[in-house]
Length: 84
Image 1 (cartoon, rainbow, N blue to C red):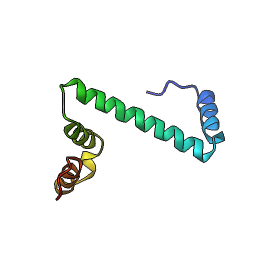
Image 2: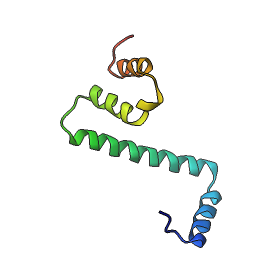
Image 3: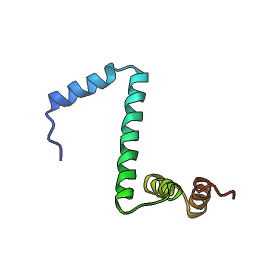
């Protein structure tokens, strides 16, 4: 669905391009932090979890499909503080 008027879309794009690279990077970092906080909140809402388990579940939610099972297991072990 696209309900934004073309003139508003052009204005938005122009405003983004007017920002300096450091400002665009800061904005992207803030958006990622907000997304990660939402993921953590959603996982936490399912029940209390240890910090290590929460880190692992956040990793799987955000990046789980980007790695094969072996690499996922290595990352999860690292996040759990276990040497592999």
